[in-house]
Structures are given as structure tokens and as C-alpha cells.
Length: 87
Image: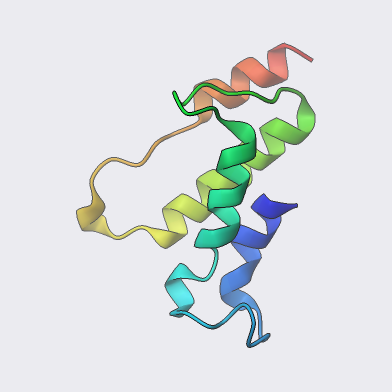
């Protein structure tokens, strides 16, 4: 759910969500989702279809929320594939 909110937050009309600039509106939700999915060392903690869906949505959020000067974005393609193969 947090990953969905990360993607949807920039489109929200709610003043609670739009308290920051439009571009960064999903960051609090994405951060919360990352803390559930990954440990401090960056290893994936959750598996299953829900985790794969969350990774896809978080990838979308990272792409939409980035600027060209931010360098390399983490890509979760391999993690998503491994998660789906484990089902």
C-alpha cells in the first residue's frame, strides 16, 4: 500500500499529502515502503507477489521522482525476477 501511495501522492489533491513540492510528495511513502522491504544492508526482506508488485511501483516512483543529474538509480529488475521465480 505504501508503494501505491508513493506513486499516487503527486496526483493527490489533499493538503496533507501536498504539503511539499509536487515532485517530492511520494518520498515519505517510498521511504516507509523501503524500510519494510529492505534491511539496513540493502537486502530484500520480503518475498512473494506483493513484494514484487511493490518493487515495480517503487521503481516507477524513483524514475518519476529523479532528475537527470542524480546519477544511477537503483534498478530492481533482478530482485523482481528472483522474487517471482520463488513463487
